[in-house]
Image (cartoon, rainbow, N blue to C red; front, top):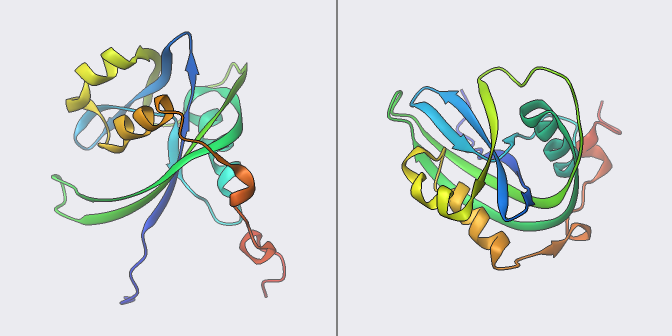
Length: 161
């Protein structure tokens, strides 16, 4: 076992249409929770590729990231396991594209459009406090250009032996 501490890197898509946000309901060890289309960065992919993939897997839609809303560091202790995990989340604004006729990822129950007020009223069911923080930052207009995110080719498996 390694003594090296490693945060879990995650991405989230903050998608707004007609003053509502595209959310997912997912089955977790703590019951049904509300989240944005979100998930872990996989090996050999960029952050942008990860958020596109996660949106397709969890919401069955194409997604084109246009801006970085923010980066978020949080620690979470699972009530089920007692294990502490540190998350580093990158939240993206972008354009929702074509819907696809495909099953949602394992554990995803459905997608739902929710207003800000509905999200506020359901905070006890959010996957984490970051769900509301990302929405609030989106509504505040926090945006950074994607050009701030650099991926070295070695992170994509190039030149790795």
